[in-house]
Image (cartoon, rainbow, N blue to C red):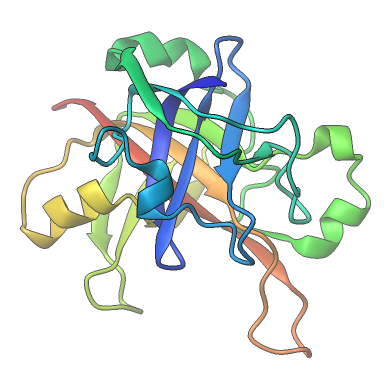
Length: 214
């Protein structure tokens, strides 16, 4: 299956890869491991880490475990990943969603119980947005962790954890990151610190594409 890679983010010691196919449908390759993360060995393309905007050919099954909120998941097949080219940032603008809540609501999470009442055909856990006024800042809850802060097209302010390792490394080095960005926002499976707190599916920025200075 061929996709444009729009996310290669940290996940449980491996990576979460996601992108869109030639029809604009989201695809998230997952492994058969309990955490669904993709290992370095599985995802390497001729010995190199896949990059955002790479056009990748990935051996995938037609279906994969939705993990309670992720209908885009496709289970990996055995085989080699191939790079078929690269897309330009401006070519991705047509895939951006406008004038809609980001992944179901205006919060930084969705209650896991909501997916019991939302029809499965209405589930989504990946969304591409364009924002010209994104600011990146340190996350007060973790050393060398960062957040993307922005106001949505609906006028709602959001602050989401960034898991794109390339952008996090730039921020760690105090390098400038454009405030004019494409953001791949992803929704994680439900999680709770203990049994007494209802599970939440948290949103995070899994991929950042800089479009230029503003």
